Length: 319
Ligand SMILES: Nc1ncnc2c1ncn2[C@@H]1O[C@H](COP(=O)(O)OP(=O)(O)O)[C@@H](O)[C@H]1O
Ligand SMILES: [Mg+2]
Image 1: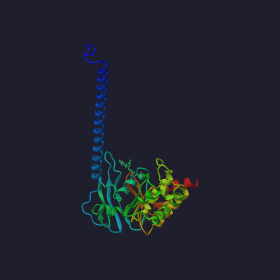
Image 2: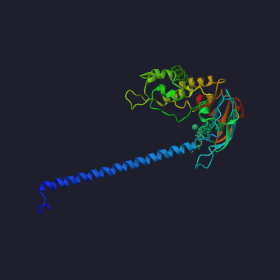
Image 3: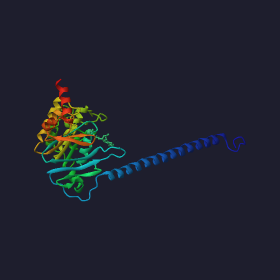
Image 4: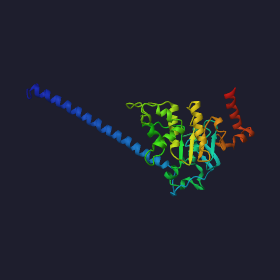
């Protein structure tokens, strides 16, 4: 058409530019549609995940209000993780009375954390039951019984909030209370450390924010323990709460745990056996099974697995 003189050169050039621009726009639209589709798929994944996750929550048939803990019974509890040939917790039975401090000890992978999670209602046993004052945990309103249990798990969460909020997350009912926050932090040996931060309790614990601050593993562990103390729970589960603490902080934390004795109930999981001597009862797990239980003195006299582990550590400290 150009050669035939039917359209002038300028018009032909404009036409080419217009066509190219239209093509580019079309490509952008196609990419945008593709992006939207992909995002939609992600959203589907997300909603599907949330649906599946809610299916894993312990079923609650009724919703009786949970009274203060008097006795907690673990009755032949077994938990199998999907795809694992051996149960993580294998036919474990034990009784914890209100006010007691009990310890779960055993080597890595012996089932301590899993058993604690079942007791705290965070995982459902494959078989067997946990009863709270004689009624299965599942009979209670999960929020209600959950409010009576605090768990300081070994894989702690570092929330990008202020130090105060990080601790207050331990009890989301009601507004954070400054006195309670500071008392919980003091018990977890976190109070002075927080005061030393640039903005004290208001310091943002995330370096990606302006004026934010990152903490060391041991400092995070103190914040996490404070979160556990902040909830006035009948039952406090402390799963390896001192693994990253220096000896002085560790000693103070265990003193705070001992202070709960007779006042509230504590399940303590730790490898520092010197700190479980005071426990009312020590449960020794091995490959998911409860292999020994008793007081420190009873277990030493029994000269079994606990005595072996304890002697090994004691010789490490003194020898
Ligand atoms: N989420 C999980 N999925 C599959 N297996 C797990 C999971 N958590 C723990 N286990 C397995 O269950 C067993 C007990 O683990 P755990 O309760 O964490 O022991 P402990 O706290 O005594 O170290 C181990 O063999 C571990 O590998
Ligand atoms: Mg563990």
